Image (cartoon, one colour):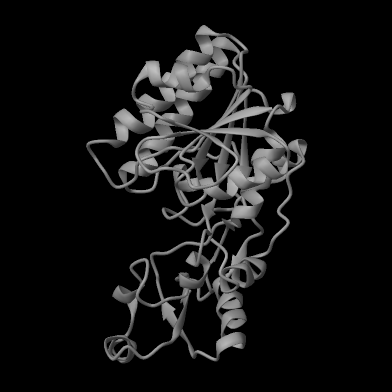
Length: 304
């Protein structure tokens, strides 16, 4: 199949390009400014906020993997994130059933930080976006897409991904200087941090339990796209794509067994554990192949 990818120069995009090429697909990428250095692909320059550029990029393709997004820019997130997706939906509607559109969403549309969930969050969990414009844009993208599916019966699939562990991100989850954790450090650990003494932390919730959460190995996410493309079972549906939930304590111990860094407990009383339910995605053949420990090893081996 000939497949168009937007956002191919992002952190996850190059891996998806390589996986699609390995699966025997022809790949076209639509880039805004940065070129995609991967050989064996067709590259087009354009802007997803321009309907004519979207129409030109979609010419002759059988599937579109829409990854392009803007994060952390209040002026651009609506015209790019919503406007760009709207242009693809409108183009697909006007050329009914001409290609399969697969849109990447994220678990920041869910109440993952707002309260303690009573069980794994599935695709029916009500929306409550993470407190930032990016999370809000993903909610609006999903609602718009689901409305287009319901109204026009379009061949569109939503893949709602957990936090993607590209590069060395997995190695930073227990870093005391990341993700606001330094605000919770007791004075002795703040002093260690100021002195640049290396150590790891395990955040504990108000119930005296180490936090648990779900993330996704980028190889699993790429596999989900490959399994979804052209899969008629996926048309009109939303799927969670995540790895098996893990404990921060187990993650910290696994890393420390490799490098010997000390581990310290940190109380984070307003944090909550959560788990993403991926059982529905089994109908498209997706099950996570990689544990969080596999992701650590992949990152340590220098993979992007």
